Image (cartoon, rainbow, N blue to C red; front, side, top):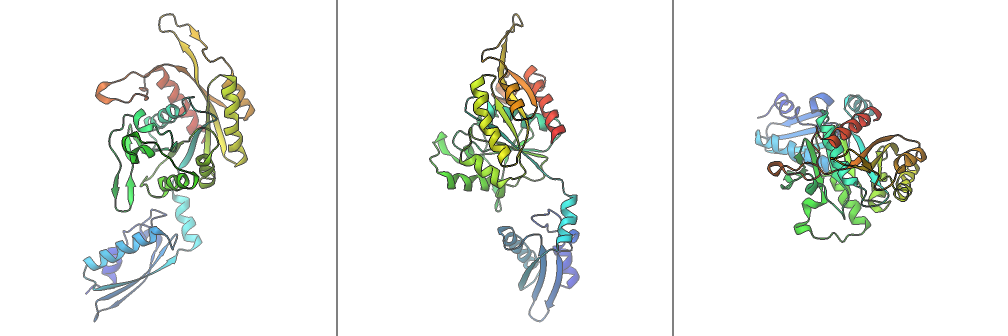
Amino acid sequence: MLTESDVRGLLENIQDPFLHKTFKETNAIQEIKIKEDKGHVSVKIALAKTGTAEQLQVQTTVVQVLKNAGAVSVGLRFTQLSDEEIAKHRDSQKQTTYIAIASGKGGVGKSTVSVNLAVSLARLGKKVGLIDADIYGFSVPDMMGIVERPVVRGEKIIPVERFGVKVISMGFFVEDNAPVIWRGPMLGKMLNSFFQEVEWGELDYLLLDLPPGTGDVALDVHSLLPSCKEIIVTTPHPTAAFVAARAGAMALRTEHQIIGVIENMSYFESRRTGEKEYVFGKGGGEKLAKELQTELLGQLPLQQPDWNDDDFAPSVYAEDHPIGKIYMNIARKIIERS
Protein backbone atom coordinates (compact mmCIF):
# COMPACT_ATOMS: atom_id res chain seq x y z
CA MET A 1 0.00 0.00 0.00
CA LEU A 2 1.14 3.55 -0.71
CA THR A 3 2.66 5.52 2.13
CA GLU A 4 2.30 9.25 2.77
CA SER A 5 5.87 9.71 1.51
CA ASP A 6 5.03 7.77 -1.67
CA VAL A 7 1.98 9.95 -2.38
CA ARG A 8 3.92 13.16 -1.81
CA GLY A 9 6.69 11.98 -4.12
CA LEU A 10 4.18 11.07 -6.84
CA LEU A 11 2.37 14.40 -6.75
CA GLU A 12 5.00 17.01 -5.95
CA ASN A 13 6.15 17.43 -9.58
CA ILE A 14 2.65 18.17 -10.91
CA GLN A 15 2.35 21.86 -11.81
CA ASP A 16 -0.15 24.47 -10.68
CA PRO A 17 -1.88 25.32 -14.00
CA PHE A 18 -1.88 29.05 -13.27
CA LEU A 19 1.49 29.65 -11.61
CA HIS A 20 3.33 26.98 -13.67
CA LYS A 21 5.18 25.97 -10.53
CA THR A 22 5.32 22.45 -9.09
CA PHE A 23 3.23 21.42 -6.11
CA LYS A 24 6.49 21.09 -4.19
CA GLU A 25 7.41 24.71 -4.96
CA THR A 26 3.99 26.07 -3.96
CA ASN A 27 3.51 23.79 -0.93
CA ALA A 28 0.26 22.72 -2.57
CA ILE A 29 -0.05 19.29 -0.93
CA GLN A 30 -1.60 20.30 2.37
CA GLU A 31 -2.95 17.02 3.68
CA ILE A 32 -2.58 13.30 2.94
CA LYS A 33 -4.67 10.58 4.59
CA ILE A 34 -4.43 6.89 3.83
CA LYS A 35 -6.82 4.05 4.76
CA GLU A 36 -4.64 1.00 4.27
CA ASP A 37 -7.42 -1.53 4.78
CA LYS A 38 -9.49 -0.05 1.95
CA GLY A 39 -6.68 1.16 -0.30
CA HIS A 40 -8.12 4.69 -0.14
CA VAL A 41 -5.95 7.80 -0.49
CA SER A 42 -7.31 11.23 0.42
CA VAL A 43 -5.43 14.40 -0.57
CA LYS A 44 -6.02 18.11 -0.01
CA ILE A 45 -4.42 20.33 -2.65
CA ALA A 46 -4.16 24.13 -2.82
CA LEU A 47 -4.25 25.87 -6.22
CA ALA A 48 -3.92 29.49 -7.30
CA LYS A 49 -7.52 29.34 -8.61
CA THR A 50 -10.30 26.90 -7.81
CA GLY A 51 -13.56 26.01 -9.50
CA THR A 52 -12.03 26.15 -12.99
CA ALA A 53 -11.61 23.82 -15.96
CA GLU A 54 -7.90 23.70 -15.10
CA GLN A 55 -8.79 22.32 -11.65
CA LEU A 56 -10.68 19.47 -13.33
CA GLN A 57 -7.59 18.68 -15.39
CA VAL A 58 -5.46 18.59 -12.24
CA GLN A 59 -8.05 16.34 -10.57
CA THR A 60 -7.93 13.88 -13.48
CA THR A 61 -4.12 13.85 -13.42
CA VAL A 62 -3.86 13.31 -9.66
CA VAL A 63 -6.41 10.48 -9.63
CA GLN A 64 -4.76 8.75 -12.57
CA VAL A 65 -1.26 9.02 -11.06
CA LEU A 66 -2.36 7.60 -7.70
CA LYS A 67 -4.45 4.78 -9.18
CA ASN A 68 -1.61 3.81 -11.50
CA ALA A 69 0.58 3.57 -8.39
CA GLY A 70 -1.82 1.21 -6.65
CA ALA A 71 -4.52 3.27 -4.92
CA VAL A 72 -7.92 1.58 -5.08
CA SER A 73 -9.84 4.85 -4.65
CA VAL A 74 -8.89 8.50 -4.38
CA GLY A 75 -10.56 11.39 -2.57
CA LEU A 76 -9.63 14.94 -3.48
CA ARG A 77 -10.33 18.28 -1.88
CA PHE A 78 -9.19 21.59 -3.34
CA THR A 79 -8.56 24.85 -1.58
CA GLN A 80 -7.01 28.12 -2.67
CA LEU A 81 -3.40 29.07 -2.03
CA SER A 82 -2.87 32.04 0.26
CA ASP A 83 -2.47 35.47 -1.31
CA GLU A 84 1.09 35.58 0.03
CA GLU A 85 2.00 32.29 -1.65
CA ILE A 86 0.45 33.35 -4.96
CA ALA A 87 2.21 36.74 -4.88
CA LYS A 88 5.55 35.09 -4.14
CA HIS A 89 5.40 32.96 -7.26
CA ARG A 90 3.79 35.54 -9.52
CA ASP A 91 6.56 37.99 -8.69
CA SER A 92 9.10 35.42 -9.91
CA GLN A 93 7.22 34.73 -13.14
CA LYS A 94 8.19 36.35 -16.39
CA GLN A 95 5.18 38.30 -17.60
CA THR A 96 4.04 38.16 -21.22
CA THR A 97 3.74 41.49 -22.99
CA TYR A 98 0.58 41.68 -25.13
CA ILE A 99 0.78 43.90 -28.21
CA ALA A 100 -2.23 44.49 -30.46
CA ILE A 101 -1.54 45.64 -34.03
CA ALA A 102 -4.46 47.84 -35.09
CA SER A 103 -5.52 50.03 -38.00
CA GLY A 104 -8.46 52.26 -38.79
CA LYS A 105 -9.16 50.67 -42.17
CA GLY A 106 -8.26 47.65 -44.25
CA GLY A 107 -5.63 47.55 -46.95
CA VAL A 108 -2.84 49.32 -45.08
CA GLY A 109 -0.71 46.18 -44.60
CA LYS A 110 -1.49 45.60 -40.92
CA SER A 111 -1.19 41.80 -41.17
CA THR A 112 2.10 42.06 -43.05
CA VAL A 113 3.39 44.31 -40.29
CA SER A 114 2.15 41.90 -37.60
CA VAL A 115 3.84 38.90 -39.22
CA ASN A 116 7.18 40.63 -39.76
CA LEU A 117 7.28 42.20 -36.30
CA ALA A 118 6.65 38.78 -34.75
CA VAL A 119 9.41 37.20 -36.85
CA SER A 120 11.82 40.07 -36.09
CA LEU A 121 11.23 39.78 -32.33
CA ALA A 122 11.91 36.04 -32.60
CA ARG A 123 15.13 36.77 -34.52
CA LEU A 124 16.18 38.95 -31.59
CA GLY A 125 15.89 35.95 -29.30
CA LYS A 126 12.44 36.61 -27.87
CA LYS A 127 9.78 33.95 -27.31
CA VAL A 128 6.90 35.10 -29.49
CA GLY A 129 3.30 34.11 -30.16
CA LEU A 130 0.99 35.54 -32.82
CA ILE A 131 -2.81 35.45 -32.78
CA ASP A 132 -4.49 36.10 -36.12
CA ALA A 133 -7.47 37.84 -34.49
CA ASP A 134 -8.75 39.15 -37.83
CA ILE A 135 -11.37 36.40 -37.75
CA TYR A 136 -13.22 37.50 -40.91
CA GLY A 137 -10.09 38.35 -42.92
CA PHE A 138 -7.56 35.81 -41.59
CA SER A 139 -4.40 35.74 -43.67
CA VAL A 140 -1.45 35.05 -41.36
CA PRO A 141 -1.03 31.32 -42.19
CA ASP A 142 -0.81 32.08 -45.93
CA MET A 143 1.52 35.02 -45.36
CA MET A 144 3.91 32.86 -43.34
CA GLY A 145 3.69 29.86 -45.66
CA ILE A 146 2.14 27.63 -42.98
CA VAL A 147 0.64 24.44 -44.41
CA GLU A 148 0.21 22.28 -41.29
CA ARG A 149 -2.62 22.53 -38.75
CA PRO A 150 -2.50 22.70 -34.94
CA VAL A 151 -2.78 19.46 -33.00
CA VAL A 152 -4.70 18.82 -29.79
CA ARG A 153 -2.83 17.48 -26.78
CA GLY A 154 -5.13 16.59 -23.91
CA GLU A 155 -7.42 19.58 -23.46
CA LYS A 156 -5.09 22.09 -25.13
CA ILE A 157 -4.46 23.21 -28.72
CA ILE A 158 -0.78 23.28 -29.68
CA PRO A 159 -0.05 26.28 -31.94
CA VAL A 160 1.89 25.88 -35.18
CA GLU A 161 5.44 27.21 -35.05
CA ARG A 162 7.10 28.95 -38.01
CA PHE A 163 10.21 31.17 -38.04
CA GLY A 164 10.35 30.75 -34.26
CA VAL A 165 6.84 32.20 -33.84
CA LYS A 166 3.92 30.25 -32.36
CA VAL A 167 0.83 30.96 -34.49
CA ILE A 168 -2.90 30.44 -34.06
CA SER A 169 -5.51 31.58 -36.58
CA MET A 170 -9.15 31.13 -37.51
CA GLY A 171 -7.74 29.99 -40.84
CA PHE A 172 -6.65 26.72 -39.20
CA PHE A 173 -10.26 25.84 -38.37
CA VAL A 174 -11.99 26.77 -41.64
CA GLU A 175 -12.15 24.35 -44.56
CA ASP A 176 -11.42 25.44 -48.14
CA ASN A 177 -11.21 29.16 -47.34
CA ALA A 178 -14.93 29.24 -46.45
CA PRO A 179 -16.39 32.56 -45.28
CA VAL A 180 -16.94 33.11 -41.55
CA ILE A 181 -20.52 34.27 -40.96
CA TRP A 182 -20.57 34.97 -37.23
CA ARG A 183 -21.99 37.63 -34.96
CA GLY A 184 -20.29 39.38 -32.04
CA PRO A 185 -20.79 36.85 -29.20
CA MET A 186 -19.40 33.97 -31.28
CA LEU A 187 -16.38 36.06 -32.27
CA GLY A 188 -15.70 36.84 -28.62
CA LYS A 189 -15.94 33.16 -27.70
CA MET A 190 -13.44 32.20 -30.41
CA LEU A 191 -11.03 34.93 -29.36
CA ASN A 192 -11.28 33.84 -25.73
CA SER A 193 -10.51 30.27 -26.84
CA PHE A 194 -7.31 31.51 -28.46
CA PHE A 195 -6.19 32.72 -25.04
CA GLN A 196 -7.56 29.99 -22.77
CA GLU A 197 -7.41 26.79 -24.82
CA VAL A 198 -4.06 27.20 -26.59
CA GLU A 199 -0.87 25.90 -24.96
CA TRP A 200 1.34 28.95 -25.53
CA GLY A 201 4.03 28.04 -23.01
CA GLU A 202 6.31 30.79 -21.77
CA LEU A 203 6.22 33.87 -24.03
CA ASP A 204 7.95 37.23 -23.96
CA TYR A 205 5.50 38.73 -26.47
CA LEU A 206 2.06 37.75 -27.72
CA LEU A 207 1.06 39.82 -30.76
CA LEU A 208 -2.53 40.15 -31.93
CA ASP A 209 -3.32 41.00 -35.54
CA LEU A 210 -6.66 42.79 -35.01
CA PRO A 211 -9.38 43.32 -37.61
CA PRO A 212 -9.40 46.84 -39.04
CA GLY A 213 -11.59 49.41 -37.33
CA THR A 214 -13.18 49.44 -33.89
CA GLY A 215 -15.68 46.56 -34.07
CA ASP A 216 -16.57 43.61 -31.85
CA VAL A 217 -13.20 41.84 -31.84
CA ALA A 218 -11.29 45.02 -31.02
CA LEU A 219 -13.73 45.69 -28.16
CA ASP A 220 -13.28 42.14 -26.86
CA VAL A 221 -9.50 42.54 -26.86
CA HIS A 222 -9.82 45.74 -24.86
CA SER A 223 -11.94 43.97 -22.25
CA LEU A 224 -10.00 40.67 -22.18
CA LEU A 225 -6.56 42.30 -22.00
CA PRO A 226 -6.73 45.52 -19.99
CA SER A 227 -2.92 45.78 -19.92
CA CYS A 228 -2.47 45.28 -23.68
CA LYS A 229 -0.21 47.68 -25.56
CA GLU A 230 -0.99 48.81 -29.12
CA ILE A 231 0.73 49.73 -32.36
CA ILE A 232 -1.27 51.64 -34.97
CA VAL A 233 -0.55 51.02 -38.66
CA THR A 234 -1.33 53.61 -41.32
CA THR A 235 -0.23 54.71 -44.77
CA PRO A 236 1.10 58.23 -45.42
CA HIS A 237 -2.20 59.29 -47.01
CA PRO A 238 -3.99 61.90 -44.85
CA THR A 239 -7.34 60.07 -45.05
CA ALA A 240 -5.81 56.76 -43.89
CA ALA A 241 -4.15 58.53 -40.98
CA PHE A 242 -7.42 60.29 -40.11
CA VAL A 243 -9.28 56.97 -39.96
CA ALA A 244 -6.44 55.28 -38.05
CA ALA A 245 -6.79 57.96 -35.38
CA ARG A 246 -10.12 56.35 -34.40
CA ALA A 247 -8.37 53.09 -33.52
CA GLY A 248 -5.85 55.09 -31.53
CA ALA A 249 -8.56 57.03 -29.74
CA MET A 250 -10.27 53.77 -28.77
CA ALA A 251 -7.01 52.47 -27.29
CA LEU A 252 -6.53 55.63 -25.25
CA ARG A 253 -10.10 55.59 -23.93
CA THR A 254 -9.67 52.03 -22.70
CA GLU A 255 -6.31 52.91 -21.12
CA HIS A 256 -4.22 50.83 -23.50
CA GLN A 257 -0.73 52.21 -23.98
CA ILE A 258 0.05 53.12 -27.60
CA ILE A 259 3.74 52.34 -28.02
CA GLY A 260 3.98 53.75 -31.52
CA VAL A 261 2.79 54.26 -35.08
CA ILE A 262 4.14 52.41 -38.13
CA GLU A 263 3.74 54.05 -41.53
CA ASN A 264 3.50 51.43 -44.29
CA MET A 265 3.78 52.02 -48.05
CA SER A 266 5.67 55.22 -47.30
CA TYR A 267 7.28 55.43 -50.73
CA PHE A 268 8.48 53.40 -53.71
CA GLU A 269 12.21 53.41 -54.39
CA SER A 270 13.40 52.59 -57.89
CA ARG A 271 16.07 49.90 -57.99
CA ARG A 272 17.49 51.49 -61.14
CA THR A 273 17.79 55.10 -60.11
CA GLY A 274 17.29 55.06 -56.33
CA GLU A 275 14.68 57.77 -56.78
CA LYS A 276 11.80 57.76 -54.30
CA GLU A 277 8.21 58.14 -55.43
CA TYR A 278 5.72 59.07 -52.70
CA VAL A 279 2.81 57.14 -54.20
CA PHE A 280 0.40 57.78 -51.32
CA GLY A 281 1.63 61.21 -50.31
CA LYS A 282 3.63 62.21 -47.26
CA GLY A 283 3.24 62.94 -43.59
CA GLY A 284 0.35 60.71 -42.49
CA GLY A 285 2.38 58.67 -40.02
CA GLU A 286 4.09 61.66 -38.44
CA LYS A 287 0.79 63.51 -38.10
CA LEU A 288 -0.91 60.49 -36.52
CA ALA A 289 1.95 59.91 -34.06
CA LYS A 290 1.82 63.54 -33.02
CA GLU A 291 -1.96 63.42 -32.56
CA LEU A 292 -1.71 60.27 -30.41
CA GLN A 293 1.30 61.67 -28.52
CA THR A 294 3.49 58.72 -29.39
CA GLU A 295 6.48 57.84 -31.57
CA LEU A 296 6.69 57.07 -35.28
CA LEU A 297 8.48 53.72 -34.98
CA GLY A 298 9.35 53.35 -38.64
CA GLN A 299 8.45 53.98 -42.29
CA LEU A 300 8.22 50.97 -44.59
CA PRO A 301 8.59 51.38 -48.37
CA LEU A 302 6.69 49.48 -51.04
CA GLN A 303 8.73 46.42 -51.98
CA GLN A 304 8.05 42.72 -52.29
CA PRO A 305 9.96 40.11 -50.24
CA ASP A 306 12.31 37.75 -52.06
CA TRP A 307 10.46 34.46 -52.49
CA ASN A 308 12.12 31.12 -51.95
CA ASP A 309 10.30 28.17 -53.52
CA ASP A 310 11.95 25.74 -51.08
CA ASP A 311 10.82 27.69 -48.00
CA PHE A 312 7.82 29.64 -49.30
CA ALA A 313 6.56 32.49 -47.13
CA PRO A 314 5.26 35.23 -49.44
CA SER A 315 5.07 38.04 -46.87
CA VAL A 316 8.12 37.45 -44.65
CA TYR A 317 11.18 39.60 -45.37
CA ALA A 318 14.62 38.09 -44.88
CA GLU A 319 16.68 39.56 -42.07
CA ASP A 320 19.21 41.03 -44.51
CA HIS A 321 16.54 42.45 -46.87
CA PRO A 322 16.40 46.29 -46.74
CA ILE A 323 12.84 46.15 -45.37
CA GLY A 324 13.77 43.25 -43.10
CA LYS A 325 16.40 45.54 -41.55
CA ILE A 326 13.76 48.23 -40.95
CA TYR A 327 11.57 45.68 -39.19
CA MET A 328 14.51 44.64 -37.01
CA ASN A 329 15.06 48.26 -35.99
CA ILE A 330 11.36 48.64 -35.17
CA ALA A 331 11.45 45.41 -33.13
CA ARG A 332 14.38 46.78 -31.10
CA LYS A 333 12.38 49.96 -30.38
CA ILE A 334 9.40 47.85 -29.28
CA ILE A 335 11.62 45.94 -26.83
CA GLU A 336 12.90 49.26 -25.42
CA ARG A 337 9.42 50.75 -25.09
CA SER A 338 7.69 47.69 -23.65
